[in-house]
Image (cartoon, rainbow, N blue to C red; front, side, top):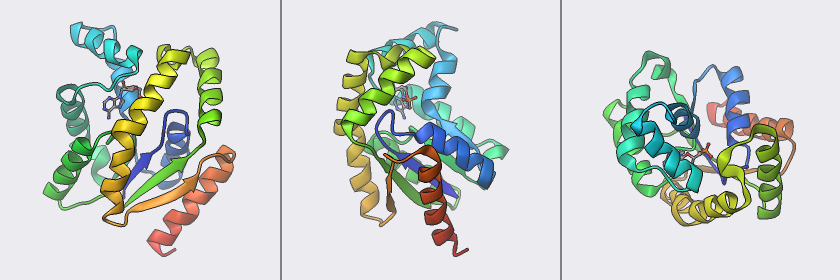
Length: 190
Ligand code: AMP
């Protein structure tokens, strides 16, 4: 299964992907994590940091080869839990083309809905706990702005194919997980 998570920063995509990866045995691909791992290691890593720290999207010439190289690995043959990708309509089209070239397609898009006040308080708490450089106040509002402008249109892209499932991400992580599992079991007819 190719499962795409879409939701603003702080909506719980990473947590839900980790929980689902354990149950479904499908690998979790977090592009944010992938980029954070390259930072500070090379001139390319420094370039990556400059985008992440400002809360801006990394350019496609950096992100697309990284993602495509991973998807070609054997681990991803059974599918992928996409966390943070695609983040633009261009990336969504690119992913569709790549999957079509291997005879596959996105199975479902899980849209995690969380209201803005809750997102800001979760991200501020994460800044204290994990010390992520982009979780400071101006970084948070920039990332939310970019989400609305660049990533929400990805939902419209997938809506046209009837792939989007709405999930109430405001609930506890366990309740969100249960809601997601119910939707996936419905899709699998189990
Ligand atoms: P995340 O961990 O998903 O919140 O991502 C952290 C940061 O990594 C984002 O604010 C972007 O700077 C960058 N990033 C992650 N995924 C992408 C993507 N698909 N396209 C461009 N930039 C990305």
